[in-house]
Length: 345
Ligand SMILES: *Cc1c(COP(=O)(O)O)cnc(C)c1O
Image 1 (tube, rainbow, N blue to C red):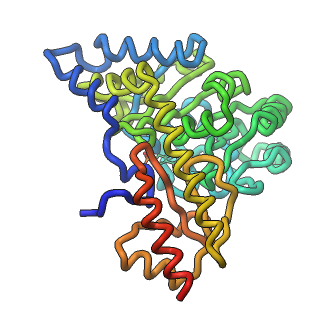
Image 2: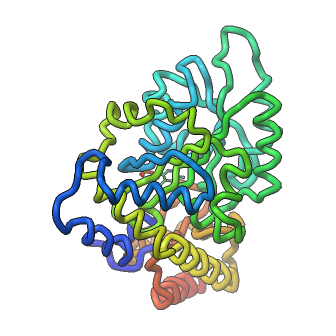
């Protein structure tokens, strides 16, 4: 058992009340299987309302599948995907994007603070144009990034320009899309299709649901036969309503926004307090719900001994603390106090 109030990741948290409430509502009586039910229909409509456009929406169990299947739908096997070298699709999906696309290669780009730069994309897009190299077809960006930063509207526009120049599609890994919307004060539409995003993988899990990711196609042509892809990958839930009803709850009640706002506010608070401790500094700017901090190795060891769960493999040279919908101010203060004491030794 892990002590409550961890900062390891936003997927350590439980289910938020709104998601749970709708899951229980969906449990009253029976419903059609495989997404033919009323809950799924309503959830998809609610996504179209949220994104202010007629998009196609699908559900998968996790983000790895959502990203991989979305990328596979944008690529032929001889195509390639340009992604940041620290992106989740590259570092944390066990080769699933390549597997599900039958071999579409990931081309690794760079850019400060976990953000793929337009220059790096352009370089990869025109590095080779001969038949012996997989043809670049997609740009994959993560919003908010794995480094706790967000792409601004201007940065997204610059990426869209490069995409247009080299006829590339845009995939967005939105594991923390809600946090990015709150951080920038922009609507889901403004941060997605209005900036040229073709497919968005929007995470419910990290936002407060038990399980479930929405794959949102803004270019409906790209969604052709996508339901077959989902089924073949073993991602079609037969009792789909238990994935879709919680989404309906998240969107209808505004919990998606409330949860992200709370998580971001907690992270900002944590970052500010940590910076007041002598010897502690941020590794990256805190722009969403994650705080990357430079801490001496022995302090990290001691924190772990005290029961704190910390990720150190993302963002070498520092520790990552992630806040979520249920982060608690008293626990944040406890963490700060523990770090303060260890730093003073
Ligand atoms: C958590 C996360 C995912 C999804 O991971 P799963 O464990 O497959 O659900 C995808 N992208 C990013 C950036 C993430 O942080």
